[in-house]
Length: 339
Ligand code: NAD
Ligand code: UD1
Image 1 (cartoon, protein in one colour):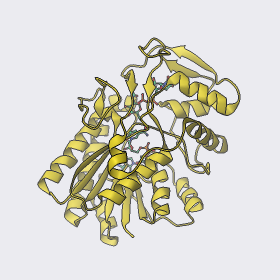
Image 2 (cartoon, rainbow, N blue to C red):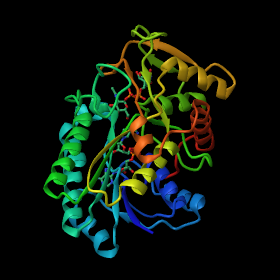
Image 3 (cartoon, rainbow, N blue to C red):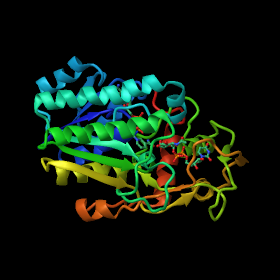
Image 4 (cartoon, rainbow, N blue to C red):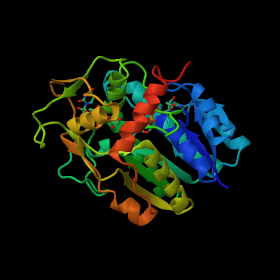
């Protein structure tokens, strides 16, 4: 079976993808520098899969560290999750974000090209669409200049990989644009473990639910939506992980640039999420209305048809699954992974 290098495989989406790769018969190798994850995840992955997943500690910006992996293994494909992802931090540290995300990806692509590995799957984001002109978003919706350095690094890496594919036509480049990943593995052994106060909605909700934070601030209730709060396409991280398996199954060694939205196609408002979460925990989740957050788009959800037609993939898990699994993870690990 094919060997897959998973950069950022110790992180939230990477770790869930490693589990699904093993289940599908692939042999993942994790490469991570733990800048936003903890080594404890490796033992959890062993517990879930029953396998010792090969692991390299390294930084994608360091060519020799990547070369070592390619020299010691025959890598058939790379799924590239490694990157920094905090929007606010990227505004304060733009050069660090371009260095990590863009230079890191460039180094990885150079090593792949030089070592003859031609299958590249990249974690892109719906953020490349900016404020949508219309929803649902298809893969042909316009890509707009990002309003923060994080978003721009996603656009830059998409373009860089596309240009490489033009220059090396036997490359298979797959750009997966994720909508809003939430949830956790049903075992409660792996999940999202942000450092510090969470920026994103779901980890904030779960931390309020376990009493780590007092209440949720809902950013804005005067948007032009049915209940006044913003609308997003929340997708269970296990469905998202399976999207990567589907992409590998169908697109490995298929030259070209392949772009897919990975979302459910359903838009939920912030209040929908609070209500679903309140149901899951059996009482109303404490929340307050607060001013709008700068840079938020009003509504963003996918048209996921292309992924279904081409890859046979669609998200299967419900909003109840997303809230129950997020809560289960946080309950079992109130402080996240141990150090
Ligand atoms: P994460 O922070 O949990 O995982 C990223 C992993 O990459 C971490 O384990 C981190 O230690 C590692 N990493 C970062 N820089 C590295 C480097 N230079 N060398 C080696 N390892 C490095 O994030 P995630 O939520 O799992 O996201 C994975 C990818 O998906 C990211 O590229 C992110 O931008 C993208 N994405 C995430 C979301 C989301 O909401 N979570 C949405 C769209 C796209
Ligand atoms: C954010 C990023 C986006 C990134 C995505 C995934 C911003 C402006 N956008 O998107 O670039 O691709 O994460 O990492 O940061 N909310 C609250 N209270 C909270 C947290 C969130 O009301 O404490 C609301 C937000 O206003 C938004 C919704 O919940 O309406 C979802 O927020 P979030 O989880 O941060 O995701 P995005 O805004 O979609």
